Image (cartoon, rainbow, N blue to C red):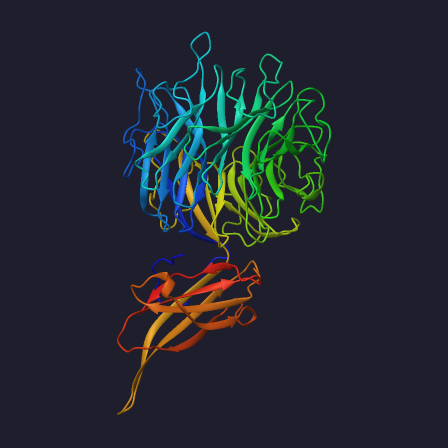
Length: 591
């Protein structure tokens, strides 16, 4: 975490939820963000699509937008931002001469990014592929999914493969395990979609325009399927998101119109949508082998319900979020009941899949949609999406009011953090300008800092420490935004003091610790560390242990006798919870 320049003679005042950085990102035409991930260093990875020839690149694998013979083009972009948010580590196009879009991104422990989506390009870049050629139907048309793994430097493909049959295929969700296996989910209406050790071997959709979900596990090399299966009933499925737990069980969520969608040990046995025009959400857990259901359930009311994002905690609880038009969407221990029109919802499903730990509407009197969810180690759920409501619930907000002009017409982005019980807001804030914005995806670092990406039409979207200060409006297009917020802030100010006598000269560090914790995050202790400047992080030594109750929303000053005069030392502070987990940290300060 870094605090920008300020007058150190004055008190540092920080908003309840702090916009650490926020930046536009894009070129002069049109961009849309779809996925975000963050690594252990705080670097952020964003993907989506662009048709801007001047989209910003840095150390790219592919430097230019590839256009078709008529001068049109739409390529994937993959961008890595440094922890401060204002510097590109790399940024690259990825695509062929037709059109493609990325829908999701994941990052592994080594910093390799995995991106997936769909393409109609026969010349999409390939490397060590499972499937090298675009599959097309008898009329020569088709769209395949793709999965691409980039090296940590961003300028080399580790692997890149197509995945699909002779009709239409797309990937909407990706996750990666600690061994480098990639799990992807999406949708297909191809009867020849590749399968391996499947739960369902054949396309189940019998309606003429139907489609099934699929779940595929790719080996670390990208050239082999570990398993691949259809998942669906006889009508229509739309899989949007996937997650994997430490045992290798994979979770898939989306929506279905099929009355015979496969269920096992369900919370909800049957499709609740009535009248032939609705759909219910579904949540399915597959065994590590991919050929067996652990559980599978509908989730919904009598209207239209869909899950857009799923995440799993370390206990096997599944958290889902999305959109509902149902007045009777299932709730349990809710923060809110139905607010009218469409609402977002947040649901936590117990590990067996047959009961809800909590389920709540989230919204105001107009329309909402939730598109992304993340969960921290304490079970707090973080949700992002869009709202049209001036009365969307806020708490400890960076932005308390809807700025968009014309309530009920276009979205403003929101970010909401729910407590582990699901019935309390830890914080909730609007994020946007006057012309329309929506949050597309959210990720967390190990401290619970939230990173959000989405789309904005606004010229006055809030920025702070940006890589790109303004939206490019040459063609009146859409730009991406990337923002980082947090609500536990630790700030150190360190200065060198000296004490002299005619025999002794001692130097001290005067350390002023300021804590901002408006969300009342439980802090067990604060630890101040010191190391010689320029040495590794493993050289830090704890010099002060402060009980969490001793510092709440205030500043305290401490003194440390330096082990050597006139030598440079670096300091930092960390906040720990009752389990000893680090939940916040300051920037480093060197004297």
